[in-house]
Image (cartoon, rainbow, N blue to C red; front, side, top):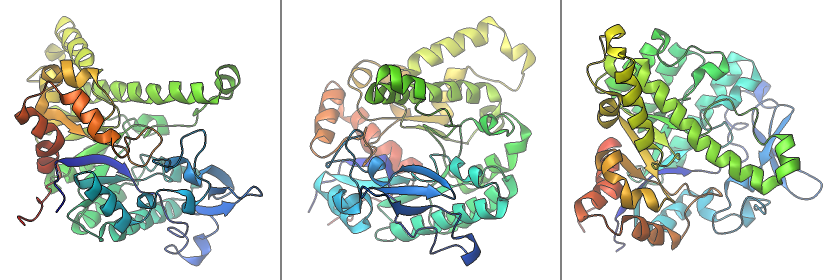
Length: 385
């Protein structure tokens, strides 16, 4: 029997071609996401009249990279889109459970805003959540769905959160910068019903990198001057830093003061930057006497982080060896990002863990790889056998 030592808190599932077209009413089918093949045999996702991304760009693990992604499903690792194959892959690498995130709709469901029709946008979100639930049914104790939200409509989002919780979802996906879509800022009372639903249902809220407005994307001028791969590398790290800005916003928003038991997860953004951000926030908080104007703040920003926020790491080697005490071993989760271009794949998972946690004691190691995620996502352990 496999020996499990990892709960992987950030992975993605490659959506099947008819995910949306098979689930929405007939009059919506030409507008929802669909797959089309170009003259060179490459498959692409389309949304209405807009071409989004190559099909294989989000499923390169073990078979390609960002420069040479698979052209179709046949060229992908089967675990990218087949739940039974995903479970086999997990068994092979000691991963007991995986938390599941989307691709096509955006890492915060923001791509659906392009449709402009509220009914169509909601139908796309619901269709995705239904499909994700079905996909995870291959083993709902090990495949853990996260609810995509129609965040542009708070009552609809709250209703969808309740619906998906009843179907077994383990968390809530939300944009870390709603203001980039013309929505109120995080600290606005506009969002209180959503925070209250998260607290009531005991569900963590994920700020996945790339959940903000991505219209800038790979800038054409940088593609021309830097080259495609250099531009992508720069953008990737920029997205990590953007989660740092979102964390600063969250810490000053008052949300964590108003909802002491709420929990947020900064997904796929790493941990090495966190000690600086927390030290800087505490310094500015005290130096500017923020509590004089905001009496609801009863602790420092770093203390709110320790109580309410988690962060995920995967490739880092320096931070796990030198900064665990500055981030807090109770606040760190492990991910692989399978099957994305930046993911850890195969034997590299164990190598990165050993390299990063080599100086870590057994208790801290177990917290990071297992206990923190088990508690946060209410993961049932493997059978005693």
